[in-house]
Image 1 (cartoon, helix red, strand yellow):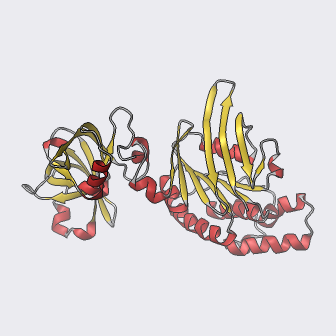
Image 2: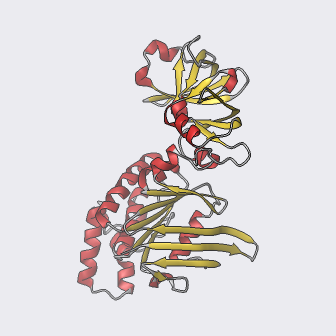
Image 3: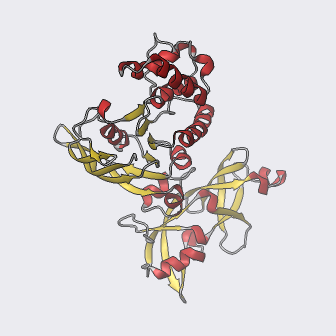
Length: 374
């Protein structure tokens, strides 16, 4: 077992600056949990309290059922991978990976077996005799992961391990971490500010802001049903389009009227609003870029816009458009749905019409910014 439980965990600096507020979370054995949020939200501080690198101001941290608040990091049976690799430049890759084992007086034959096995899993066998300066960023990160792997720890902690890599290497290393998780079959707690990493890696995601947990859920749950406006805008790329409008009800059906265009809230969202007895009146409407469709003039629900920026992303276009009242929206549309003439017609300054898919709209209270369907 390698469960982790945080109960009312709090971190206060200088008796006045609260970095983490009453953090409650149960992490199951062999679960991969990702802490995600903007810089300064408290995610790395929380991870460091689990590791024992930061003192806990209040609350308890349990690992495998044991309260570890007063245990030194070396006694918590955790392994940690840092953002900056923290490799010893004068040691070979082999010696870097073996360092903690030698401190524990592990026999050399066991060290050799563990290091070579980790190197084989990570694909760095050919680099064992090299120094870190002779390695690429991705190879150095594999060495740092290998050093954590050989410790046979109960919990694997990773603090923004991919943030120093370029985009191509980050994508590659994300896939390798998923494969590594399958091979190690242990508990992972991973910190990142990148919501793409969070969505692709985590069994569950813990979204934080200003030291508070905003939502805990699976990637699907936080994407489809954000608890509040912050989560809705933070998860998803490009970010959710947000606008103020009116929610009305006629003959048992709900409607919104952005930019003077009346749109029905249909499908499960309309049914959910009815089941919740959602109040009519002012509302914050959220629509993801991929849920805005191109349409034609005069079509039901058509909203006239002008293209400001056309970003060609290969498989899709990101259209930055402005409505007649000056509201800016981002529209994400697959290029496979467009022929060459249609793509050319979406050039900067051109006129187009869009509509919103009612069954995937999001509705937030204008005062509390909470999701009306919570």
